[in-house]
Length: 102
Image (cartoon, rainbow, N blue to C red; front, top):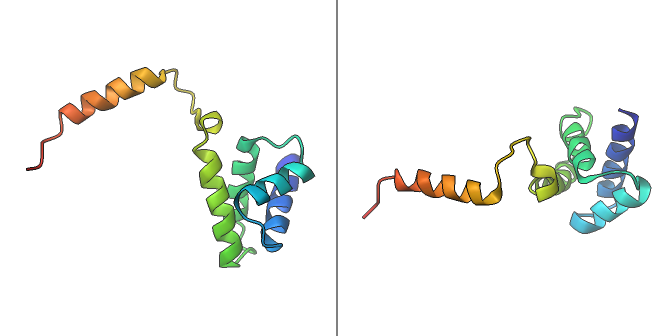
């Protein structure tokens, strides 16, 4: 929890300084070198649920960073053992059952 709190503080401090996207990510990594994308996403969620943090611009920047890194292949792992080819095949099979719009 201590590490997440440090990442959270770095996120908020960087966002308050006006940093966004990659600059904010680099700022957090500089202050917390052991922080992974997963830890940054979790700290972002902590910031988004903090009732004391009310500045919409800061929340928007943190939200955008969390979404970007949540969609990273390294963070997206939700425990499924399905290979990318299998996902493509299952989505194609699902699309075959969809009615065609004319």
